[in-house]
Image 1 (cartoon, rainbow, N blue to C red):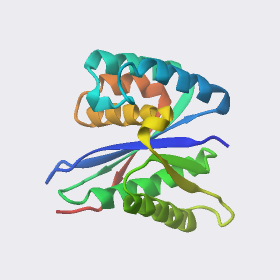
Image 2: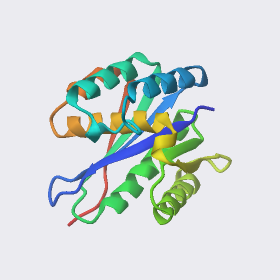
Image 3: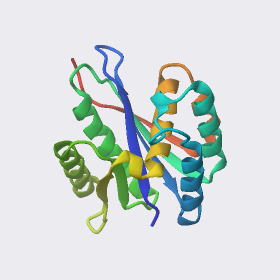
Image 4: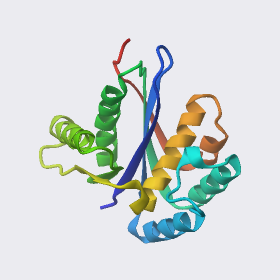
Length: 191
């Protein structure tokens, strides 16, 4: 079974907020190559992070991700008014669990946050599994510190590219278009 790795990007705003939860999936025979590519692109950074990169670095990394045989499943939810980020994340994660299961994934590794927020993710995924997946389905969420897993960097880059596209700057998303499966949802979050 393939493993998905996920990270987020979001914008809280009274009328135009949104939440992007991006995942990357590489088959086992490609995953090690992908890690090596990402480690080679890291440069002086502790990890690759979309907002710490210059545009030329973003372009170079997106180009490499587009060349790797992977699938990037991305859920974008709106609206996300002020102080509704975690509710929007839960809605996006619920949808992502359903989508990933459809691609044969039973493990999603997310970048670690605080212990309490990690527990929320695990609880949300468990509730999604019980509510939306077949009774015998297995699906779980684990967490890993960002600097330790290059696949999380790939998810961060995909999330950054999708966030930029949502804001009207689609150059990077367009480079990944053949690899990205986009899902848009209504979060139900209102001001």
